[in-house]
Length: 197
Image: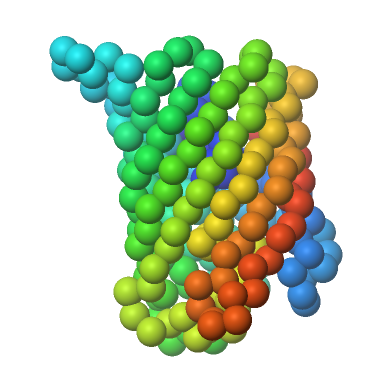
């Protein structure tokens, strides 16, 4: 199935989308239109005592014109004690093809999220993610605190779906600086409009 980005809920629909997103990261302070594709599969664990658990496998792919792109592959164990509440935790791999790198930059990480669905058009979520480098690529200037690519971060999302093919997503995001001793964390407010086709 195709779905929005790394932290939005599983919907059971198949789509690809173009996302219009405002990025405040210098020198990219313009509206950026890019291709985003997420393939997500939910595997039900059919075993006694595990009826509230699912295994979620996903691949998030984003391509930016003239700036390369990335693939983020994740596996999460989901626990859903009720129909509205979902708790997930897992691990993942990131491959980034970006300017200035002579080879693909690889990272591994862990992530967790807590999501609550208030009704069929309003969801809230808090999440966290920690990434580490396989090699000493941490000095790449393009990756440092760049909100266009996966980062060590935490945040929240409020997702409003007024119609089946449109979603409005907004919430705080904190990119945690794990690369310098100064720990210059970056606080921002994300807003995106998703059109599903």
